[in-house]
Image 1 (cartoon, one colour):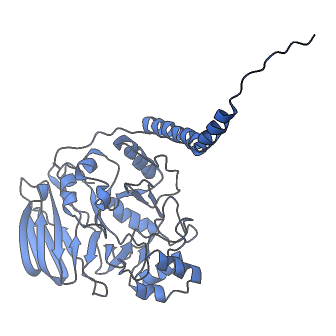
Image 2 (cartoon, helix red, strand yellow):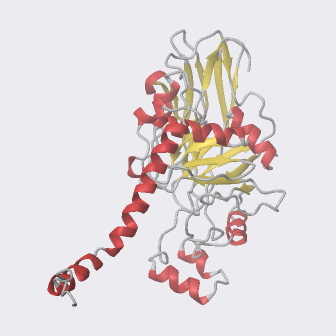
Length: 385
């Protein structure tokens, strides 16, 4: 005798409803685990890759004055550009080639240039080339420049980095031979003055940038006894239309630049740069000038203008700063602790200022007819450096 055993009751109508409803969330089943992995990864590197620094908070002290320009000889000057981007990075193929950038800057009288592409060192085979890279892919544009660095390294903080993480990155850059610069701090307020006061490892701040000029940032740091240098650069991404028309670009690059609204821009090339002493233009000499602060930062007021002439700055035995220039400046300013304007000399090519007991450092700003010039600080120390 066969027993009629009933099987499980299946609600076929419910099945047909559930399957499509779950199917529409199929992407979430993939993305959520990936997002979880990213969060765990980011938390891990944030906790592991960090460096705590003890930073100076008191003004420079000592009876010796350190003048970074004391050993300048000759009357010439070398124009150097230290922040430009090329098409060497895979996700920026519409930008200009290294050869195009170098030829344009050479035509404008520049002695050397560094291509600072994102995450990599480009054009490494050229022995006359200044090596560099720009670190940071995060949305807030918290980037770092390393000039003279020997090799690139992975960005472990694609989303977020604490101040201690930034200290770790800058420390690694310096260990790899890099001179570390904070670029475009005013872009998206990526580095506030408070934050720059709380992190260490950088040696210069881009106070002349297409994304905002602010030399007073230097006074915040110098007043704390931190010998941070100025930096001026084009942060070149695209040349002006006049230059682009002279390039032998493929048709696809012209189309991409047009669609991306890169064509027709005014361009910020040739306006912001540093000046080193005569003959100091190869990588080794430029790095030595950077490390010692023996360079000036220049911002020209408009393209095609004559280059403003940088001065000769000496310090006498009685602690008097003597400035002499081949150009008559509209104004010379001596600036001290916390940005105080100590003295102003109008319409002259010569000026003197004697260090007072209250002065911990003095830096100079020269306003010429075609541009402005910043010096690095002359500061007090307990011994010669």
